[in-house]
Length: 232
Image (cartoon, rainbow, N blue to C red):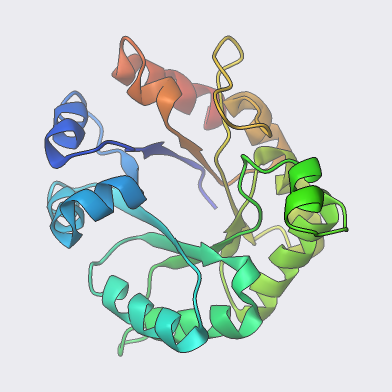
């Protein structure tokens, strides 16, 4: 599987998003559209970014009863995104329903991945606030195994867990890893982070990079640096 860098376009408006994307005159970047932008601009922002030739990871992290998730995924499937996701905590039945809803009549569908634990979640918070007594690593591996059993393509996890997910699920089970920062950059509000180069070594298939690119003085150079360190 080819590796790729996904830029987290966590902007508040379509104008801010396109002002950013217009800086890339040579590359058609793979972009992540999250809740903030999708809720601000609606499905049309997805359609327009797709029209401009970008691949899209629609990051809405669905988590609801199976029937609701199935119907929602059927709607998202019509947007022709390349990847979308849900929370693995929603159970195997919910993930199976999501897969069914996402699959089009011709059998095609976007890549579907499950969020194991958010990169802002530490083991202490998970145990004290969520009352999950297992270790964070054991929890992430179990959630990944549940996603695989449900038929999903992979999971979102921090780069620190990508290797153990591969070991538990198979080398072709996709790992999409946020929490990537340059060695000389700020960590921000994420607690389980690593560098693009280290993410490559660990086994990430896709890395999701936001502020180190979007808030850089020269975003295009930052993106190219990230690609060089991760893809080679």
